[in-house]
Length: 356
Image (cartoon, rainbow, N blue to C red; front, side):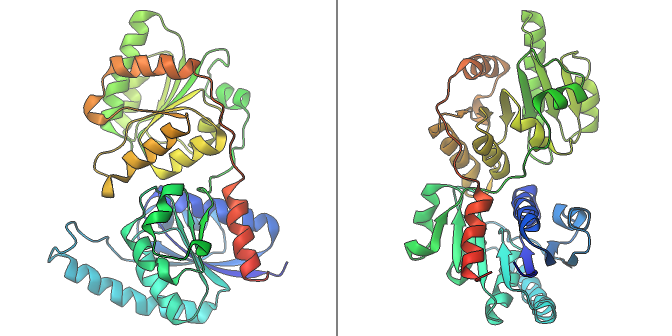
């Protein structure tokens, strides 16, 4: 296979960036490539891509997402900044001349996809959530293929069926066995292992509910181990008073822990849902009600349909309900078989289309 020249965009959050990492890591196993990556200045993709892919040509764009409601007058300067960013993107793409552009969505993808379309660069788009984002809906018409993570997303995109591919959401491969991971945190492999997270920035709602849950478990002499990513340094220190909890403000490669967990307590971000599906792990899901188009609730319901999820609305969340849900999910048998790897499905289409 010849060396590729690839342009990527989609960032601002881990939900957009991590699928890109998974895809690029898989491409790197198959062939050499040069990478041009358009990042949101100051966000996770901008901070991480040079570490994850040394030698990348990074183009930071200073952009913001549209305000809600969309007709807000405050969107006028935001749209103007996107128009100016498109000129910068056109210059970078013209100089780099990629074989194709891959977008994982987010507001940064609007000027990048528009510029790539003008230059007649083949475009591939991936949607992580069950409810397609505004930009992805608008840009779908430019895609050679539009990859989706949930079957129900197909009805939201105005494209011929043959250009919509149910691929799933690419996730990073786990690198440690259960025994290795638990030993690294000083935890016993004999007890149930529960991972708690609230998204890349943590969740005070989940933190507070789980703190009360830990009190309840301690009083009830129920024994299990927890790995808790709080997003908050002070809360992480506070939770260390429980001997069965290992808490950190941020945990690198948390996907390794999810892959070997007995249960996950989490928000319904696309990456977490995808990791639960890919590894066949069970989750108690508390959707964030502030997510755009309430997509986290739809993500959570999709996981529940597979038999892997137990949904608790934030308004209903109590430590007692968490305790009951944990007891039910830990003993629940699942007949779920993880599908073919999303990265393989996506790359089959791209590499075939590009005759690479």
